Length: 267
Ligand code: 2AM
Ligand code: CA
Ligand code: CA
Ligand code: CA
Image (tube, rainbow, N blue to C red; front, side, top):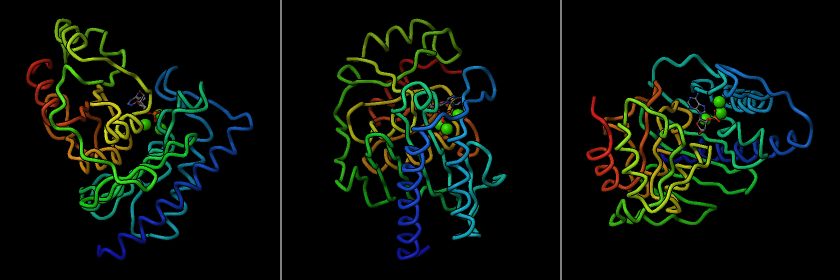
């Protein structure tokens, strides 16, 4: 992929993301159907599906050689990351979308042979667009984001976690999670993995740690955090697999090391 081609695909991705955001806002004004998937807490709406279908159709007609890996299964049955793959979460934070009508995002990551090329995370209701191209930095609304403060210490950090960490689990003995919560300056829960990655990249939180995320939750976010000098791995420090679910920690490398080495239970 040369730089002209990359720019063209990026421009399309940005145009479609903003258009998808407008479609979502228009659909928010009318009643929409809410269904459940795996269990009663796993929500999906007509708007999630409509948005993913919108991307899949645009991509198929413009780039028939590209594959689409989307949460709602309206793209392709992707079994390998060879070639160009769009990894899309049409609405990340569906529960926020349903209950709050805000605090959700569209996440689009473009991968070539398994390597992240660019990512976009669009906070639809605030109209904030985070973008990153590999090797070219990350931007919020066109403004370059500064690199993460690598000297930020765990004890001075604001860490995004969800409350499932407070339920006994195989990653932490109880002492570990209690010590971690005591150690950090504060914890937050936003309910959209994509936005939590974007906030790490923006430097308004210092890390995000969660137990199980799918590729579409993290595809764009990983690129954003990379471009500001942060790292993303599984919570035991091992590399992520972009075709599977992973536990995830994203932050500066010092905080990552300290959490992985001192707080996570090794198997
Ligand atoms: P979603 O809204 O696209 O489903 C909520 O804390 C975050 O975790 C959201 O980004 C949400 O994405 C994701 N998430 C919700 N349920 C999940 C599940 N069962 N497995 C993995 N990720 C999930
Ligand atoms: Ca979902
Ligand atoms: Ca998601
Ligand atoms: Ca989703």
